[in-house]
Image (cartoon, rainbow, N blue to C red; front, side, top):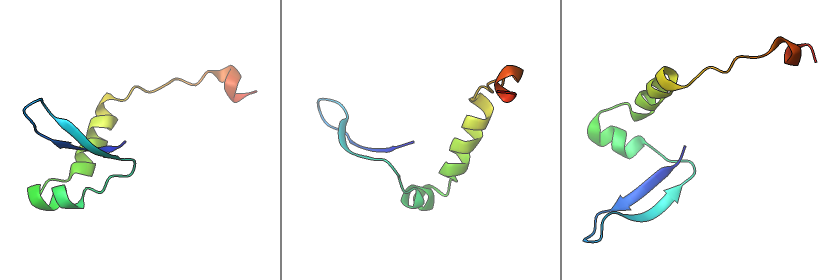
Length: 59
């Protein structure tokens, strides 16, 4: 996961910076929304579960 800071412009959104470890405190404080929790819920709901083959367990 990364945080991408965008700035609107006449040419469309511009990428200002990309953070490999984004801090969500500011946006969570301003919106009163648990952003990290929402991301986790989305991943939990939509992530496929990969089946483990028995032959790989016994290898």
